[in-house]
Length: 386
Image 1 (cartoon, helix red, strand yellow):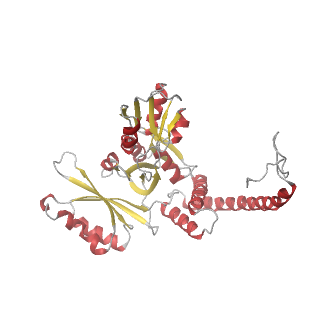
Image 2 (image 1 turned 180 degrees about the vertical axis):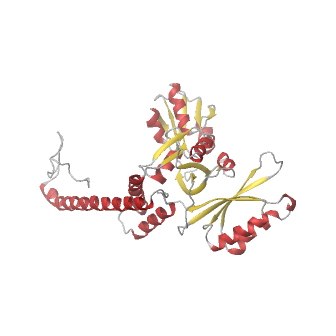
Image 3 (image 1 turned 180 degrees about the horizontal axis):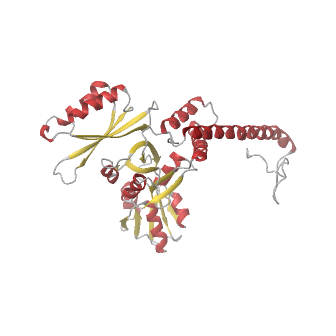
């Protein structure tokens, strides 16, 4: 039976409020009735408490005035505290999702946030943005990662969400190439399990001869494509939602797209196969970028871009990274990218555990600045929820 309260205005064909469904025995109806009464009472309490919370959030917004309404570290602390207090039967992740939506709606009372993402609608990046900011945020799709950042740099939007790496295929190079130059700061991260579907306009068993997808999706599903569609042409496009749009626009039964299942509904496509990614644990990490620098939350990560002196090839990187080991700072990522216009010159993208204001991290960064030819702290931010 549903745990939702009965409607006060029953519709034709449905049991009236307070009356059991026709197939429920009187004994079962009698046993259920007190539980439903308690649920109704709890719903009233929840409504009152939610509005109390919203009123307090609005009062804080009034006190802050023009100060930033969104505090990533505060949200992370609230969600961590709620998860720690949760005693069930709701799972901790479910409780965090509920409270994320509550905070999203309360924040919108102060001012709805505008968030850019790699579009069109239906991408995994849109899902990541919605997961991080909740349903009250106003999402705006952009055609490229460059445009996603430009809108926020020009203050036409508050935050940007961009993919940065995938567990199967590694770094999203365009995002890495933009991080050294953008004035935006990393202020959050999102991890999203990626499940790809094969979808097309037709329902028949006609052989697929063309498959549209983002290059990363094509790489993440290459075993499936090789086994099931060995002769199909693989056509890379800017996003998986764009792939779905192109497949739908073609109207041809032999054209398909790879992407999230939500895109099939958005673009009127039919599922050919689900969960076709080669790695069932396939996960993408996204960065949230904006003009704010969150304070320490207690569970943080810091992202850096550094370059080692070219004159010290033999030991340059060892000397650059030595402060991390000596000061007990854990490094979780080291990725290199070539410097455009500089032959065999590289910058390194580094993730470390901790916040740039933490004593050991701050000391390590001071020493690194003395040894590096270039160092930029992209940002310190709360680590993604598990």
